[in-house]
Image (cartoon, rainbow over all chains, first blue to last red; front, side, top):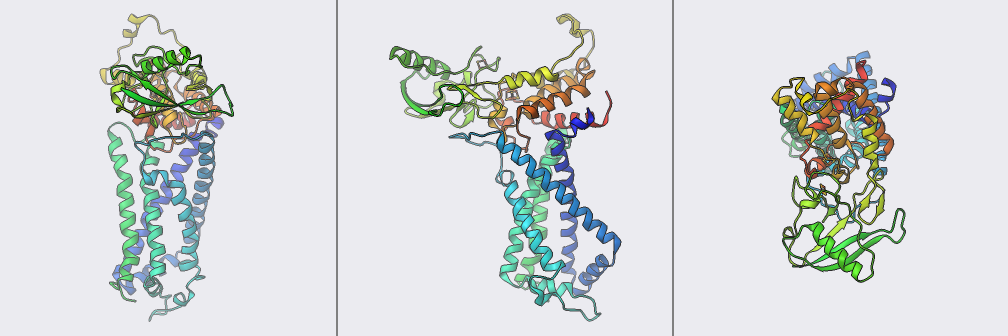
Length: 224
Length: 248
Ligand code: SF4
Ligand code: FES
């Protein structure tokens, strides 16, 4: 019995929800971390060095995130294939009443964000793109992550890319957060309203928190 | 009032010539939509044409037989209302009224606007029942049930199995229907006995029939003629998770 339950679509949705919850939490933590750029070079480079110094923990977290992401994408692909197959003939006329743009765009924002992650890693973690900013060191001899960060975002094209990605992740997380709370069976009765409000709250927080950093650099509110 | 019907005509499953046909009709605004279709069919029969096949039974919003996508909305323009309860006064003079069948792989078109909804019956046979002797009506009072519990169970029991939730869902998911059945029975003591077995069996059957999964768009709740709440889906998910960890 139990093994069959694990093969149902609902089990796949629960997998989607749990991995998604992990990714949303990571996005929030990542955002909070990067807001430290407003603290200046000292604070930010210290933060970056602390994270780099975690060694084994850092690699465990990276491996965990990659695993979660793969599980999430796999479940997403399987479910959306199934969903498409469930309506082979489309309506000639269908007036949708309740769903939202971000709800309908989950696959699109998800794929866009996946592409962005690769670029983002190549930018700040690996230094493959825009290497001109990557190798600087600060006065203490630490990698000048702050300088790389701020100089990168003084380029409009880089900033626009990141703003687009912020929007995609915010849209994705808005639908995802409310959605996963229902999939996990929490969004009902008197909890429903709070669960449905949680999505937009997380989405707006992510959008504001992620977008303000590159914008501040572009507008020279933060100097390298 | 004059209206123009634009109706999906299909001569049996897999008809390659299926498509929309236009029919002008002089109707009365006090007629129900289905009475207007009766009138149209009477005219078609008089002209020697094949009448439009559509489903209906009680025509009072309680049986779940009627099933039309009216101008792009399952069960038409009025919320919490079945197709049979829609009146011609909902439409404008000269309006084109588009009628389509429910569209979902597990609901194949039998003819015109009639689809085969026996997938729902098979989900019900998989577990949507109680195996204990429930007795006659007075026996319902043998086990006292608190008012809030009774009301909550009844809200879910109001589902008439029409399938509009599937028709409305972008994924053709049946989770509002299955959730309503599972939640209704899991809430009451008579249904609790089999709750672990029930949810797994019904969900497996739902998957086998080929319905999609829930992406939480909420379209089902918006069209449901009995206002079944999305809470049903949350409770269905919760029941399934429970069944995965609890032994019967
Ligand atoms: S949940 Fe509502 S829309 Fe779905 S079958 Fe039941 S009554 Fe019809
Ligand atoms: S015909 Fe019975 S509910 Fe519409």
